[in-house]
Length: 179
Image 1 (cartoon, rainbow, N blue to C red):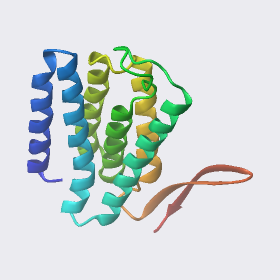
Image 2 (cartoon, rainbow, N blue to C red; image 1 turned 90 degrees about the horizontal axis):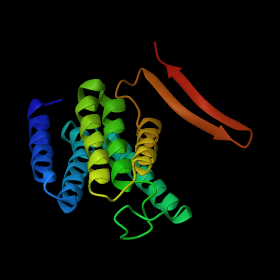
Image 3 (tube, rainbow, N blue to C red; image 1 turned 30 degrees about the horizontal axis):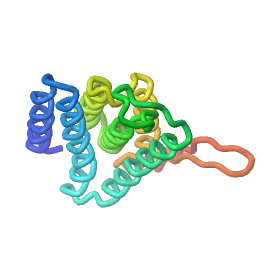
């Protein structure tokens, strides 16, 4: 992982955080900026390295998490803390950020994953501070994101593969190792 990519990511995240202490609207803006930075990193880091499978898997992880969050918003309408609409549960921003972070962590290890997970946690906190979500909306979004990131994204090391499987009779997780 190139250090300059993480310096750029930290600058964007810091700009978003610096703007965040003024108002609910500022927290909302900061959460969107940092969420976008994490998602762009999850898509861009693999692309810069020529790892197109990693980019595709990150995109699928983020898409699955966001799609699941949007579906759950329709199934379980709940008023946002600010009263703006009934799309509070779960947090789509948080789901997307954690999916991107989990994708980076699963693909490249904790060195890439830890900064991304911290940024994703900031997104969750900012969504609560912006009064767009309750704490449990953010926890549900984080769980969706983590699940999609870890289930859809494979490790870059192709000697060990972990994959989910399922059929009409059940499901599980498989492990394949190459020696």
